[in-house]
Length: 227
Image (cartoon, rainbow, N blue to C red; front, side, top):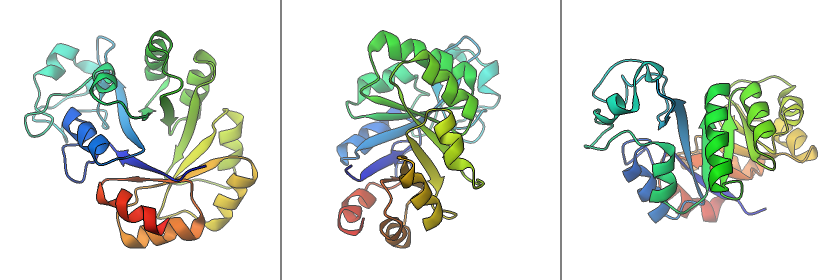
């Protein structure tokens, strides 16, 4: 398969993360896909934000799960950008998306949107949580899924296979050739995150990874010559 360069929360190294401006910038930079994060608001909206609370990335405070969409809309997510919902991202950019879900509840909400808008060809779903991957796989026939891990044991490939994932997204700083070879032998793609330096790109090439998630648009250009 072709090596994929995935924009991390858009291109969060140069734009406010998980905002429409960041996603549009990632698409303009030619990213092969865009990664984003989903949390459910108090009233069930799929809010695009990484953290469980709004404190770090907006001018507000509090847990997303305790705020309505209307309340989230009042926040500045950086540079005057509002907190987007998932369907706004679908309409703002045309490239493939990798949607990270934080729990089973978000999986169920995402499944409804994916079925209604026929998103299986365009949206790949990722999660750190095995049960969330299993849930979306059960709800959306044919969905492509990615199990994410920052730290993992020797069973990480078995975990991915058990929940029907087609790929692993693993922390580049802890990734070993043994893990990559084991995954490839079991038919799993391996994506490294977060790849932001030339040293990381050399490691991507040495490990023969299938893709890289990056904060910076220039990594795609240089990665074409390195990976």
